[in-house]
Image: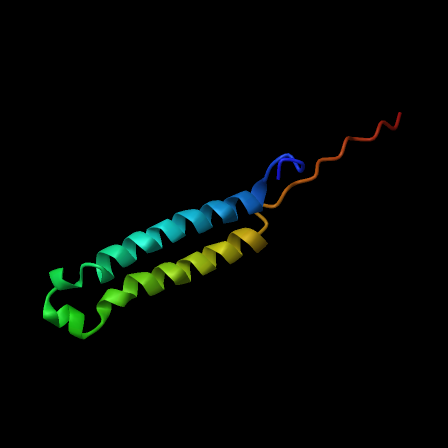
Length: 85
């Protein structure tokens, strides 16, 4: 990475999204599944505690593909104007 002079554009955003969403996923798992006894039995019975994890994973995949293959974050190549006089 140092030889290439860093990471720019889509690669940088994808890496940032991955790190942030993975950290949020760990926090959500710790809260919703690690503290199951704090939720009422009716909530535990219908397995709604898995919904935030599945939603977070789906959003992560969506945004990773949108940023990686979208045109907003692609590196723009600027060429010098030719001098024709």
